[in-house]
Image 1 (cartoon, one colour):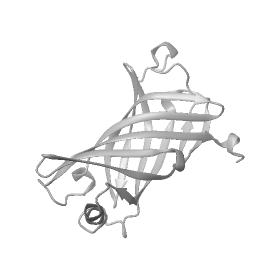
Image 2 (spheres, one colour; image 1 turned 90 degrees about the vertical axis):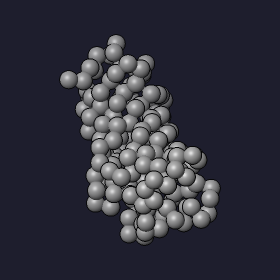
Image 3 (cartoon, one colour; image 1 turned 45 degrees about the horizontal axis):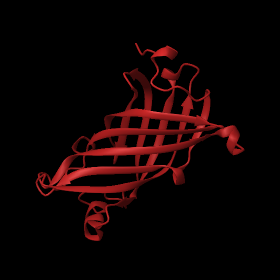
Image 4 (tube, one colour; image 1 turned 30 degrees about the vertical axis):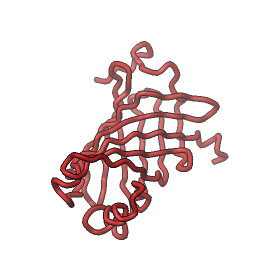
Length: 183
């Protein structure tokens, strides 16, 4: 049973209940992975295509959805980016998005854990986002979260052994309350 007592929350201020739209241009998704048999590191980004946060009267009942644009994959290396976007990895032509949805929020220690799932190319795998920072101001939510994703669990199995199995994501998200956006 999640602990939702105000004194147990890791954040001093929680957003007011309501619906907030993710602002893609103010949201960044960065990743780190290993390659070359684990000897080298790869860093890069994805773009958020959109999403929604529904804050419940009980914060533990809040939900989050987000969409990642697969064609936005960028690591700063043209050949690698082309390979990753190609048919052996993301196949962005046939799989334009990665979808995230979460319906469980629990509070532990100095963070919140948002449990959900990633769906890519018809495969869904569980994922947990560790939310360690939330700020609220004038109808806007800003949050920071991290997650570890197993690409094999999502069916992305190209270059086993050469390209790392796990990616670590670092996400900064901004969302605006619908009434604040004029919706």
